[in-house]
Amino acid sequence: KQYGSALQHANDILKSDKEIVLAAVNSAGRALEYVNKEAVMWSEKDFVLAIVKLNGMALQYADETLRSDKQVVLAAVTQDGRALKFALNGLNQDPDCLKAAGIFDEEADKVYERDEKVTLSVKFSLAEQSSPY
Image 1 (cartoon, rainbow, N blue to C red):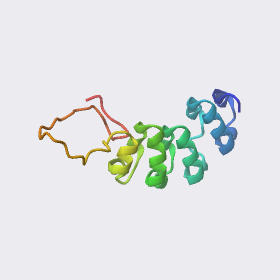
Image 2: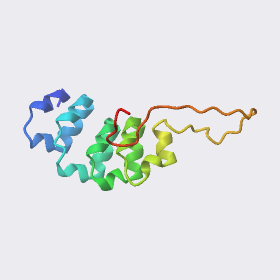
Image 3: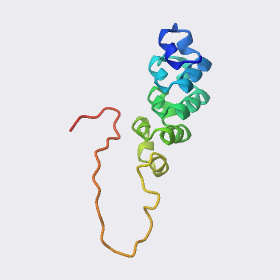
Image 4: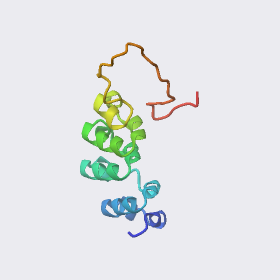
């Protein structure tokens, strides 16, 4: 459990064990790549909440119902804003989720003295799969 990368050499049973997976990802976030992505644990809210708090990108492996759960999505995007692209059912457009991901300015409703406006263009995709264009 001390080194998360050791999960790479573990058997499939260990790669599906919630406690071992959480300990490995906590030790080394990259251990996530060796976890069993098809395991039942990805449909369990307590597990998914715990793992997305360690590595927000783990949201992509969660069951669709949890990817539609605002509490889970908020936890994931707070840890890693890029996880927003894995949110479902409009949560990738939810103002709270956008703020937590650092995309939506919390002062968006602020009134300024001057009336000039500026448009900032940033390459960003809310799709799970995006093209380079």
